[in-house]
Length: 417
Image (cartoon, rainbow, N blue to C red; front, side):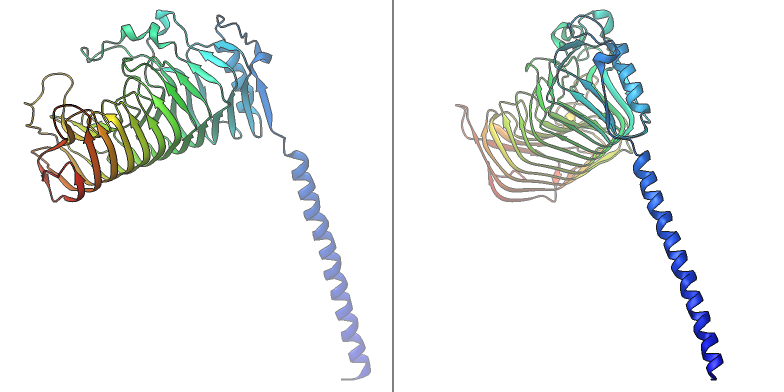
C-alpha cells in the first residue's frame, strides 16, 4: 500500500470515529433528557384527608359522601395516593370504595369508624367494601366499631334459610396484591373481614373482638381466594376465628391466637360451588383458648361432590378447647338432615396432617373423625398428638368413622383407626 493509500484510509477511519463519537454524545444527551423528563413528570405520593371533604368527627354525622369524595380524588391521582381518616370518631354508613385506580392506594385509619345503629340501615351485606383493586393497603392503628349489639337480635339465620343479610365490617372483592395490617375490628354485625375472589393478600397484626354469643361474627371469612397469608393476630369472636370455604387455596395461617370462638374451620363445604376445591392449607404455631372447636373440617350432609385436600395443622396449643381435632361430615344445622353417624357427604377429604398438637380438651372426645360413608376420608396422618381431657369423666378418647389409609405416631389419646 502506497503512502497516499495509507493516508486516505486513516482519514476515513478518523471520520468514522468522529461520526461515531458525535452520535454517542447525541445519544447520551437523549437518554439523560428522558431520565430528567421522567423525574419531572413522576408525581410524589399524595394523601387526601376526609376532613377536607366535609367529614365531621362527632360520632353522629353520616360521613359516607365525604369519604367517597376523598376516595374519588385519591383514586384518580396519577401516582401513589391514599385516604386518611384522622383521630376522632366518624360515623359511616354503608360504602364501597372501587377501583380501578391509577396508582397504589392506601386507606389509613387513625381514628375510629362507627357503623350505624339505625335498623333501617342494617340489611345489606357490606359496611365498608373495597373491590376491583390492586396494591391496596389498609392500616393505621385505628378501630372499626360495627356496633353489632344493635343488630344481633335481627339475626335469625339459624332458623331461617332466607334470613336477611347483615353487613360484614370489611369486605374485599376482587382485591389483589394487598395488605391489611394494624387495625382493630370490634363487634361486627356479621363477619369482621370477608375476602372473596382475592389473590395474594397479607393480613397481619389485626385484632378482632366480639362476645362469644354474637351470631355469625366470623373473624376472617375466605372464599374463592388464593395465596392468602394471616399472621400475628388475635381473634376472639362468636363464630369461627377463621373460616375457609369453597375455592380457598394456598392459605398460610400462623402465629394466631383464637378464642373465644368456634376455632379455625375449613368449611362448611359441599352446599354449593362443587368445583371450587379447597387445597393447600397450612395452619401452624397457633393457640386456641376456650374455643368451641379447635381445628375443624366440616361438610354438609347430604352435599354436592367436591374435594378438600393437602391440609396441614402443626405446632398448635389447645387450652381448654372443646373438640380440639374434628372432622365433621355430618354438618347440618337445619333440616332435612341424614341420621347422625350416617353421613352421605360427597366431599372427599384426603391428605391431611395433624402434627404436634398438645394441651387440654374440655370435651372427653378430643379427636373426632366423623367422615362420609359415601367417600371416606383418606390419608389422614397424626404425629405427636398429646391432648389431655380436663374434665372429671375420665381420660380423653378418640372416635372415628369411615376413615381409611391413615397413620398414627405418638398419639394421646390413642388412635381409633
